[in-house]
Image 1 (tube, rainbow, N blue to C red):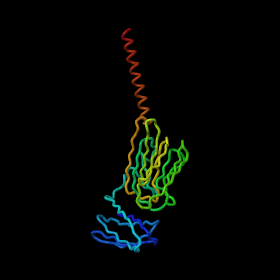
Image 2 (cartoon, rainbow, N blue to C red):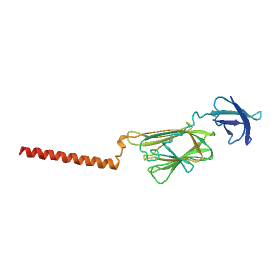
Image 3 (cartoon, rainbow, N blue to C red):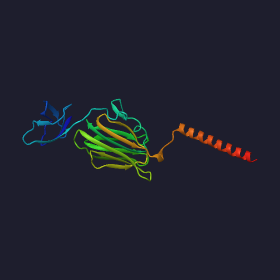
Length: 249
């Protein structure tokens, strides 16, 4: 549990207060960054009361976030390595398919949120710098594109990413941050997701992939089996034809 609060008409570098709940209370002092504070609540559940030691002219708006269950987040899709959360297959492979990612996360500082590529040597990324959230793409067909917008000043954020294909085969990547206006770009190439950045702490992750059968590639071993079966059937047909021909003679 944690509380994200926005402070108005307050110029201090830190603020103190008390958090109360049904079975206890605790005092705290937290730093103020860009007019916002984050108050960690640990395993507290249920209703809470927040009291901040603010001057008479200051005010606040606060939102409490709860995690209902602490479970590994889709651990079959993720690999924790080198202090990063990497994507496992299929997201760690090259996706030509329709794919969706919906992630809630806590952001500790500036830096990379998500690293991915389009089957080329240059990585693309979603990152935070100077209170801006930026999407920087390097695509094989459309080159470099970068767009930035103001990041809402809070600790908990939501990232939604969607790779879609329309009937003519064009592929589009759409990215939403905190339900703001989406970033949308044609990519027309496979997407491979690498990892979440060091400053990201995942709270929840939902992901899905839909394979388009028109783009399904038969594994090499299966192709060899199909060819062998095809040759066997052809040989059998020729044998039957020759046998019938001999009988007629």
